[in-house]
Length: 103
Image 1 (cartoon, rainbow, N blue to C red):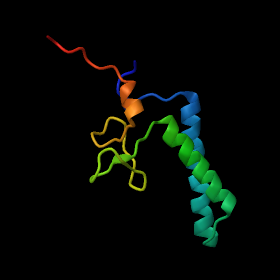
Image 2: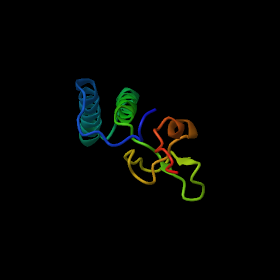
Image 3: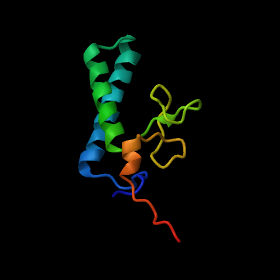
Image 4: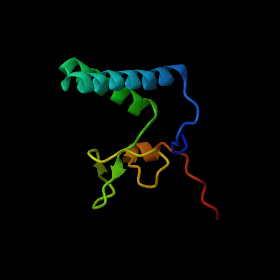
């Protein structure tokens, strides 16, 4: 069993490369918007791809719904995995180590 996920303080070279690619995709889109007030579908697609790679690599989590904690709010800002409002599926939670009950 795994323990509850926590924020990473060290990144692998692959994860750091994903952050760099997100940075570069963001930079390209921002520069194009500043220079031409336009962007291409390819730029938006690249930004979306890198956005997903970084979110997955760093295990960012959606927030729990304020109305139903069993539902994630995918439209809201994501949080770090150790945030008390981070949403985890039942399956994800079942994979964590649980402390032994004392008798």
